[in-house]
Length: 304
Image 1 (cartoon, rainbow, N blue to C red):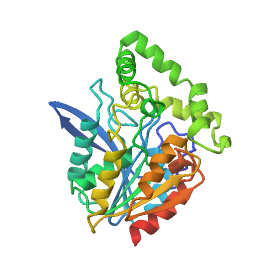
Image 2 (image 1 turned 60 degrees about the vertical axis):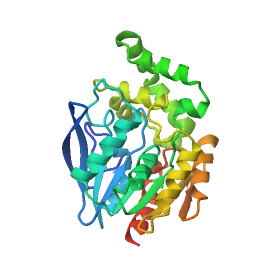
Image 3 (image 1 turned 90 degrees about the horizontal axis):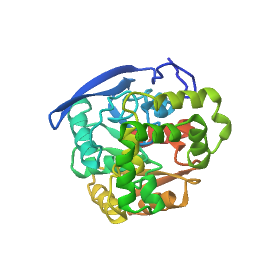
Image 4 (image 1 turned 135 degrees about the vertical axis):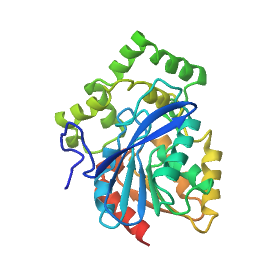
């Protein structure tokens, strides 16, 4: 079954088997959605964080890889089809989730493809020797929007707390997820080809933002609470530690039209010894806009 990520579906999937992982963290059990397709050695796909984050953004990549591998695509807690509880969303939560998910649902994957902020979490996973495999980091970032803008920490914390409030928070979130605003954001730094931003596509992405509890995790992402690194030093030191292990192979795909600050972090990562790199003419959403091209690079990387 072939599914285009631009096809309008009530519950879009990768065309594989949707499964659920009940994860207990600090006494609370939540359900994590993930999907498997193909057969062979496992390759784990980690989506980028965003207001509209979903594993379906990686559909074209998954289709290419499923010809040779078993693809396991995760929806992060608070995003996609996973539960969206009103918990404290922070870096340590996602590090614990990824560690437990790999150990219980995708033990010793042959490869990990991680987009956006997922790249930082994948690097920590490899640094902790929970995977010894090939990593492909697609438009990798570690700075959330507020940190990239240079906003002070007190402002980020204040806004994050404001969005959690029942009435005011819902209103703020609603304004920032209106289809017109979402389209503006896509045009600004997600897609290069605006013709892809059809009414059907934007309506589908808007639906993602309207699930119960949908505002909590995106607000944490925007305000830097989910940044996988504290600064560039940690970004580069973690990657250096991963590449020092000869059992790891790391490749980076840079987005040539990414915002300057994000592109600078990708570039710094790609220049480290032991890291291979490729360029694609996309922006922060190149993993979806150029999914077929990314898939071809991923297939070659994980096969070699």
